[in-house]
Image (cartoon, rainbow, N blue to C red; front, top):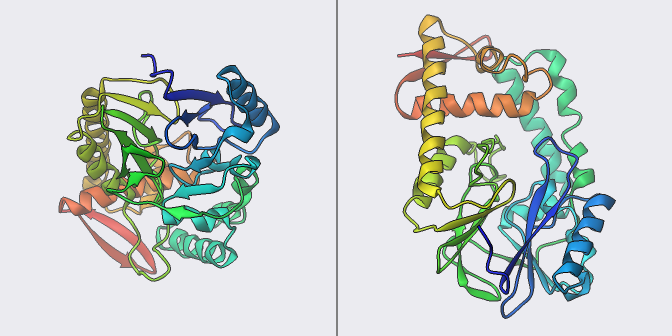
Length: 319
């Protein structure tokens, strides 16, 4: 499907990540905006500059940058646009742009305790020492304005801000009145985004439950009248209802698999993770544990499982 050329241009840049290329969007309106900023590599910058030139712009023409969420493949080049006076996103993006050391220290300690609670073996502690590694691909700076659910997009009053937490606790999407949806990583055609576990906010005690958030925001999107999705990865698509139904169906299928395993005997989330992701868990312990715990959060929310703590380790039981 073709984007309306005069108003929105899709630019595709490479990343060093398994997800592959990432899309950013140049949006013309009262302000010339760049939605998302790729990853911090020379290859990404060169690709972005070339494609800007192909549509008649240069980096100096970008007046503001709007971010869908804080992940490095969406923020990497945020500090390369000298004339962009505004950087706009959900408030939770700022700690990543400013390199908030207090928050990162808290983040690392939280996951050290979290791994212990969920029975993750000691050999995976090396992962905790690399939590900050992806920051080398991420942009630096500071938000000049925050936005949230229900706001109009600055410079583009025809777009409404939609909160779409789940993949990230900073995730926002943007819906134009004609049904055009700039969705970051929330709605993708070819894959389901990982519901990534993050710590509680510094002033809170309960961690977010990203899979429950993702489901709720998928169902919310089903009622927004979305006509076409301009995603962060993969192809532009319009079969929105079918994709949402597929994502819900596959999630429930995986949850039923987890419940079946628990009906055999009580297990830790790590034991379940090994069985759900036998080829991936050794190298992607963070993503596979997030997915596993997400399914357990869903089953607990439905009343299908209970929890006990034995010798400091959390076990899940089927009811």
